[in-house]
Image (cartoon, rainbow over all chains, first blue to last red; front, top):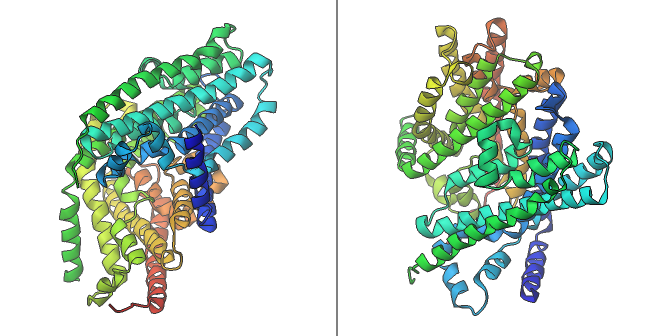
Length: 258
Length: 267
């Protein structure tokens, strides 16, 4: 943990060396996700509700997913940038150091510019939480926190899979974007609106719905069972196959030796 | 002219080599297309009267967008060119007896076309086979088909000339990532990449349609499905012609000005 903190400080300091560039990238991130917000806003304004979910409820869902994604992207960025690491031999250097491999990869790249999205999610929460009509009792607040953390775990798991696949293909696979970027883009709406098939897929295969659709039902008072609110905890299980695949990849890895 | 065509051919053939990448791209585009269709059909179920266009027109828009993403995406930059500007190998490019603006323009267009050629056919074929409101339909008249092709080519030119403006800014900043990100986010939204323009508020749509962004992907895709027709079509086509000329001339002048500042160090 102390080591990770050191990495954290080094990354922060190095990125602060180029303040203007940092600021512009942050702005870029903010505007990119703001345009996604505008898209949803215009659609919701035109149609008022989708599958019975009101604008505020959709926005709550969007903000939670956005925040989760930005957290995952900020800290697990090292996995996302893993393909070039394999290519240029950086990974060999990591392997010979007597420290945990995963910790070093996490520390190799911490992207603070991703906090542009985070900022937007915070602002959205500030606006939506008082106005969305949810009665914020302690268990509902806990549910919302679990939603965000759970979804962040799922996205992290996806980044790990993305990196693990690189061991076999050496190139990053573009179609993994369907799950990461697609999860962010389409996860903005409660996943049930895409129909049963997609919802089942996102429940049993990639458990994004566990942190998004089901707890949202509880938050908005559509179901009363408390356990709906604690479903995000199960998504941690998703990390197990992700890390198994990762371990398999590491074992499969052969250095080019150069 | 022949020299530029040769460059186009080199780039085009080079681009065709990345077939595995194209396969991965196709699967991504399919998934996005399907999810968009599902998303809009959920809104259709919620309130069909709120729809600004026919569902089949929207479906055609989505599938054309996915099939021809490479032609119109605002976030594509030729990494060779960016590398040349920041790395200094641009000096070699300047030695060539060619106009650098048109050379880079040709290269970027060729890269876009080769990507699109590799990717569009499987998507178009499947989209045609999909059942009625969800798939791609044929254009209502042959005139619309012809105008689709013409405006698509010109639209790609507008997108590319916008990219050229971004290359120009790279001469002035050390790290242009931020500027690029802001520009591509704004352009992508205004050109209807995130949300088709008819779904935006009426006043906003009218204003955007007069800017270069309105004649990028918005125009050809909506002409194809017959959503834009008659006088409106001719008017917007005129706007597009105007913007192609203005953007290319502006970019060319700017690049010439930027070139005067470039200092090549020997060695």
